[in-house]
Amino acid sequence: MTKNATTPGDALAYRTLLLGQSEDAGLRKGPRTQARIRWAACELLEGMSLDALTVQDIGRQAGIAQGTLYQYFGSRNELVAAVLHDFISFLRERMLAAAAGSASFQESVARSTRTYCELFRANRGLMKCLLNHFDTFPEARAILGAFNQEWIDLVVSAMRRQQRAARPTARDIRRRAYALGGMVDQYLAAIYLYEDRHVVATAGSIKEVVATLTAIWCRAFADILPAAEMGPAAR
Image (cartoon, rainbow, N blue to C red; front, side):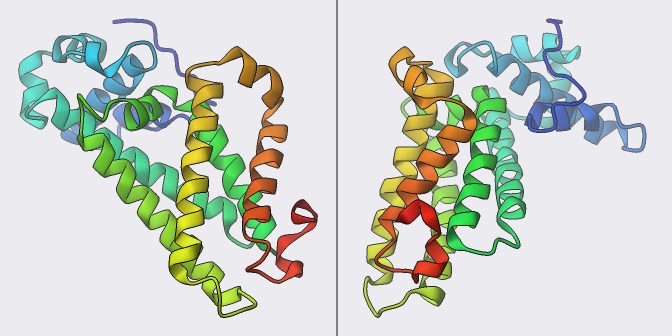
């Protein structure tokens, strides 16, 4: 097996959660083995592309026979799809928890954006699978699309409750939210996945990245929400 790159304190990494489950004596052997297999796939994807990942690699990393892996997952793609579905739930839960209790739209955006940035950075391998493999792994498009749809539905619902005028319509809000969401993913990919030196040099610290993205979100919706909801970022 390759060296375990996770650390016990790395709570933002989904693979750390899986590793903990695989070592939890309170779980039955079956769930622990499944968690070990999922962890192995996540761990390997931190250092290799999805196209290069094989069932043999995963079995070696997990320390199990290929036959054991096939007892739980019919193929590599079935395993990766299951991991990505669960990872999306992991993302969603943490972003919602971060935004809960926010006093304004700006605060909600800042909290959820910071959490997304931190999770993106801590789970580069899985984010790369979601964003970069539509041709060879089309399931990623559907998984990411469902997550984006659900998150944007939440944005639209929140804004429709608070907007100060009859316009824009829900469709107008959705259009802006989709454009902004795509921008965020590409910006973070340039920083954390491709490590574009020009983008990295100007992006600054994670605090500055969050401030930039929050300001853009707030400005994009400044004509919809009351000024009290927007905060200084939109002024």
